Each structure stands twice: as structure tokens, then as C-alpha cells.
Image (cartoon, rainbow, N blue to C red; front, side):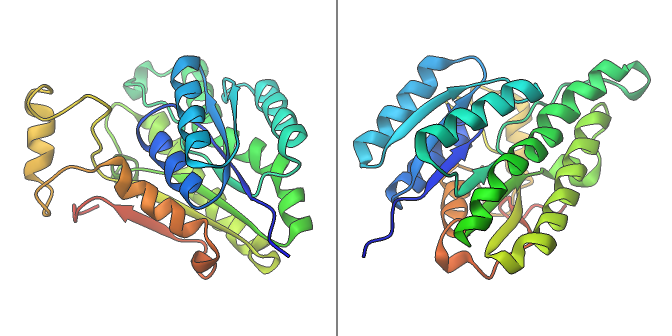
Length: 248
């Protein structure tokens, strides 16, 4: 008897790494819930790309920094597909705010989007993963967050919180067939952005990258596909850098 198609929910899936991950998981047979916060047209485009590959797709617009919005999105996804087998917490914000200028509101917003959303969504989807004896959670940190970023104290805090959550979930739910890992990307230009058009910032980062190029969405998406496969079932509780060899 063929296994029923699994379903992945990807936050921030309208472009860049989120879009690439949706495409790669769709090619592996996953239905995709495409989340975005504002650009519905971009999310609808990704959903259409998924359907063109073969699996089903649904668009779920929600501000993941709002707990009620997260809960509503999770409920809608579960009603549509029955269970979410894979949770990719890709969306994040990275505002520049010097520490002494950072307000409690600034800190709360970044923590909600970058860390607490992963808690809220994992809480919603883990019961179904446990019932099915299989699940995958993939979170994201970053090079600057690992080293500490001047002017982004709240971002660094939030990304370390995501790493702590990943390790805790890996320990608690690994025995139930559910793995949790976190990816630390290097420099990945946005869609339409390149070294020539970005001035000296990307050129400097390019010069620091041993492989001689910057990252592409497929570099992350191929790893996401592995982590979310049966073949990736022995990879658990890991932080995996995908950065071309940059020291972190």
C-alpha cells in the first residue's frame, strides 16, 4: 500500500530560500503549505509552481509574530491536509537596532517572529507527528547570530533561542521518530540581487567565501530535502553551516 503524501509547512516561502525549499520538497512528493506575511502574489506563484510539479499546495498568509495568527494558520493547515509532517521555520526579521536604543517592544517583536513562532507552530503540529511516528522540524540561525552581530542584539538572541529549542526538541522527540535540526546559511543574495548591483557589501562577502561564490537557494533547499527525507532520519539535533567555508 502506497504511503499517503506527506505535507510540509514553510514559513517565509514566497521567495528565496523558502521558495527553493518548497520546490525541492515538492519534487520529493510533499504537499506544501506556503506561508507569507504580505506578498500574497508571490506565495500564490510558489503554490502554482508546487502544483505544476505534482503535489497539492495551499497558501496561508499570516504574521507569524502574532500568536493568534499562528494558531489560525495552523488550524487551517490541519483542516486542509489532516496533519503537518514537516515544519520549516524559515521566516525571520533582522532589523538594525543598537542595544541602547532597543526597546522592549523591539525585542518582543524580533523574538516573536524569529523564535516564539517556532514554539507555537511546533506545539500545533507535534501531536500529529507523534501520532504518525514520523516528523521533521528545520529551524534557521545564521553566521552573524552565531558570532554576535553589533547593532542586532535582539536578532542574535532570537537565533540562539531557536538553536536551544532545536536541541531540546531533538532530545525529547527523537525517540518518537521526529528529528529537529537547524541550518546556518552563509551569504545568500535575494532574488534579483547580485554582486554588481549591491555595491561593496556583497563583493566583500564574496571575497571572504573560500568556494569563490555566494549561496543560491538550491544550496539550502537540497539540504532541507535531505533532512526531511527518510534518509535524513539519523541527523538530529545538529547545527549545519551552509556557507562555502566561511569561519563562524
